[in-house]
Image 1 (cartoon, rainbow, N blue to C red):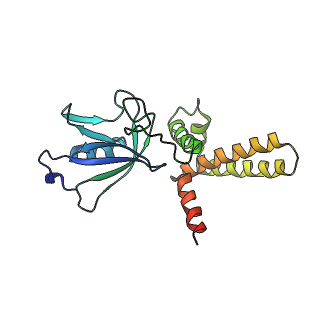
Image 2 (cartoon, rainbow, N blue to C red):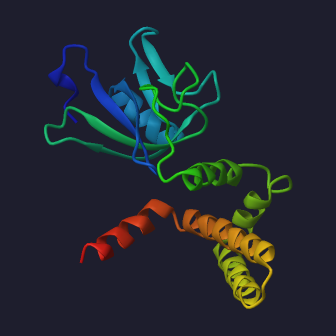
Image 3 (spheres, one colour):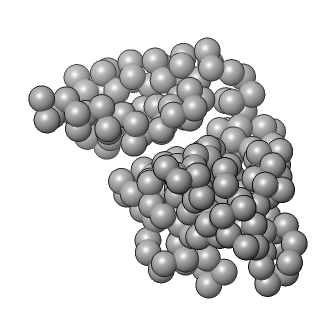
Length: 196
């Protein structure tokens, strides 16, 4: 990264939601803030107004959980992908551009909730307890829910069928997260297949 291109040693860092691909905000980084971001796994900038490193969410708790970072073709701008924990903007909006960060609708929000609950105390969160039990247990749970959907599909109780379908989808989202991917990656594959 070419931090010397600008006189203050800072380069722009565009932050994008790793799940929805929505642009969340723009900040500035130097080598120290890049290192801190990687170490803390929370997006950290150099605040020009505070003249110090600033981890987004250090006061509000609305962190940006770090996913990846890449430089542009001139090595003077960064694209940081993150998962927001709460509103990104200090005004309370999803992005600093007053846009809704819904991506593919409620399912995207649900993926963010799963990510948050993954970090919770396993004794207080069903989702966290599944992650503690590991990938095999999560995959087994998806299998169990799939069987229940098939069983309910053969009957005429729409309420039970839809509830089992919701359980299956919920556990599938957990499995995707356990595999360090998301629903958008699956949608991308389906879209590519559709264009063939």
